[in-house]
Amino acid sequence: MTDPRTPEQSAADEALTKAIEATLAAYHDSDQPFLLTDYIVITCQRAWDGEDGEPLTAVGTIHRDGDVPIHVCLGLAEYAATRYRRLIAED
Image (cartoon, rainbow, N blue to C red):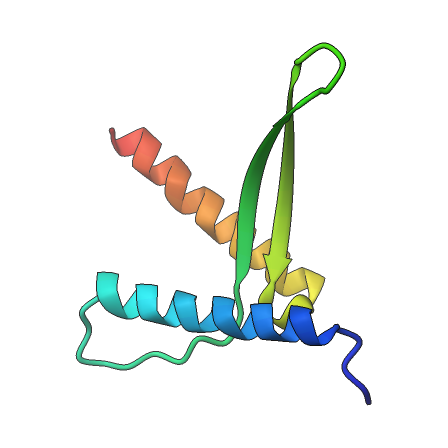
C-alpha cells in the first residue's frame, strides 16, 4: 500500500510527532516510559473577512500520520472533554 500523503505532509507529520514526544517528556517527568501510539491535535484558527473585516473562526483536527481511526479520535476527544469537565466542576 502506498502512502497517500505528499512528502511535505509526511515530513510535517514526523516533525509533529517528534514535537509531541518532546513536549510530553518535558512536562511529564516519569520513571515509566510510555509509547505514543495515537494523537489528535485540535486547532483553532482565526482570520478576518476581506470585505468587512468580520472575524472568522475555524476549528480543525490533525491526526497522527494523517490517519487515526474515527473511533480512536472520538475516544481521545471524549476522554479529554471529560477531564476538562471534571476540572471545571472541581474549580
